Length: 213
Image 1 (cartoon, rainbow, N blue to C red):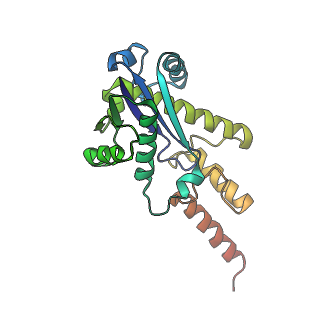
Image 2: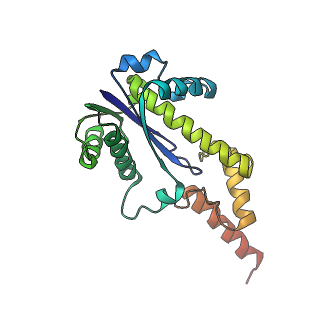
């Protein structure tokens, strides 16, 4: 048995980071349900393929909320993701785990994940694995669908928040307006992110100029 591992939401400023692993017999099995890089699929098509993945294969996930990402003393985000990758691989217990590497050095990332495994298996760590291996594409679809659902839930409660990524003007407009109104970032924002810190600093500067000395 092999499994593919990927995540969604690594660079987002709003919402969770979701890690997923999908296990099956071969890359061909994953390709047969239409699995490929989630970024090449429409939201509707991702949902369709997601349903096929869940129905046919073993899946393991980890959801890292913003507070967990912020509270990582002494650890890089890549290291936190490596631990989550190891956790989902250990849940499934494959013979081979194919990872979408989160480090510039793919081999080093694979060794890091291997060090956290509770059930040993072979590790193949590859840059762009979701484009090369359908089983990793399947994991990318699961992670993306679950994160998109989380963002939709937040939007229903708080109004339009965009994709949650700093490059999205809708996300930045929401975050800025929230901080101006509430004087603090929303609980589902990553407060340690430079984007959030800059908006908080902008608020403080604005308040200081309102009361010149």
